[in-house]
Image 1: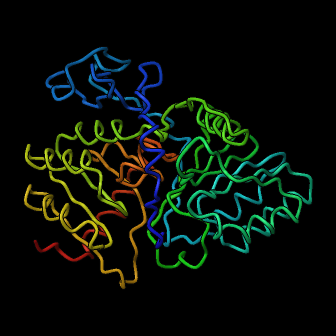
Image 2 (image 1 turned 180 degrees about the horizontal axis):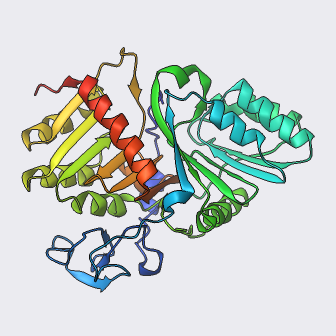
Length: 367
């Protein structure tokens, strides 16, 4: 997104508090719950939770030293701009009974018309659009959908911003996106969409949609591998902390001190950390600090043909986080965001190839 989602939510920040991690809803691949409520993804017991107060509980799979693969073969990946949005349109048009969609920015005539056509042939289509930060931008789409039989509401007032980008088809297939439905950016923007046919994930996303549709408070379910905001910061920090050999990272923002510190710590303990972003003067100080700590930082110019909008962490070529969460406190702790952590070989191999190529073609950061 070219519009950086930095909202003025001072009053909300004072009132809100991060959601603690819950041992019964461990993210996919977690092997231990730490005493401070975070999760570890370490494959061995040695050093697990060493920076988080020690181990509170070992989780299933920890004793054997192997992490859960989560949804595994039930996941597939769409890479943008490489594949275009044809696969997304096909998925939107595939609904037989119902389709629920949550979107931060929506300005795509083809997607609008597809949803209207779904509604016309009897599909129950519900759409939640952000209004708190991007409402005026979304008003034309809101009005169009409303006039064409789509049930549409402004997103929940229980969170600062609804920055989530996802939809669920027939309560069976979920699509979790890092990108918005904004067609003017499709050809130049690095984004990913995970097609998730895991029943537990689809159910958890539907339950959270229902909460937001009703504008009610509630705790989202983690399904088999979901990462929700508010409250995702410690999960992502723990994921970074679990790296033993390598980290490949892309994000649009780099303002959260906990993420910066975790990446610095990883580089200092010998992890090969590669970070790719589109350059913005807002992040210069943090990128300088990361480079000094040994992180391999590379950036694209804002005028380059590729804009890095993806939000991805690949750990040790074994686990991947993909989602809508930017590395800012607001995004991780106060917005409605959705991502997932997976060990799916299909997803990992595509992410590895794409991020490596992006890194190779970016410019080395000069402090």
